[in-house]
Length: 198
Image (tube, rainbow, N blue to C red; front, side, top):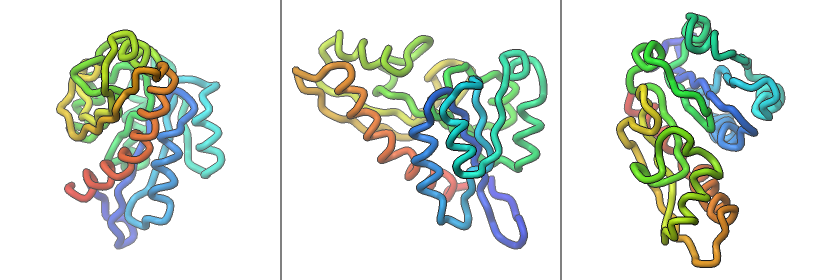
């Protein structure tokens, strides 16, 4: 997964995000002083996504895609090839990844899910939808799952999970705060471990 660039081995990451990009910022910050890892491009499917502000702040190239481009053209793969991307990280990206992209990057696309899969996964299970479902079912714990991506929502092989306790008085918003803390704590570290193995 690593490219030889100017006699230095650099692993290049593409971040796909649909929202404010808090995980994207944690990844960028984690690797900012690492000469062997670079966040090379940020892709979003929303022109108003706050993650674009991060791209500008850190001078990272960005790409806004439409559904037609994403599912029915080679624009994405051409852009990823242009930046010699080694790993794609879905950090709050809400579209299903198409087969052509999965096949182009086998075991090189990661997703972070805000629950302990296989529970609370699948279409529509994202963000507060997950935390409301966990709360409604009276679960005593929840957590995060980092997994490889295939052509089905939240179905790829699990790489890592971390759990946190849920108190009886916790609201869905409280649960979301606990889960986000786990995401920020672990996602960059797991990315680093995966890059080291490849």
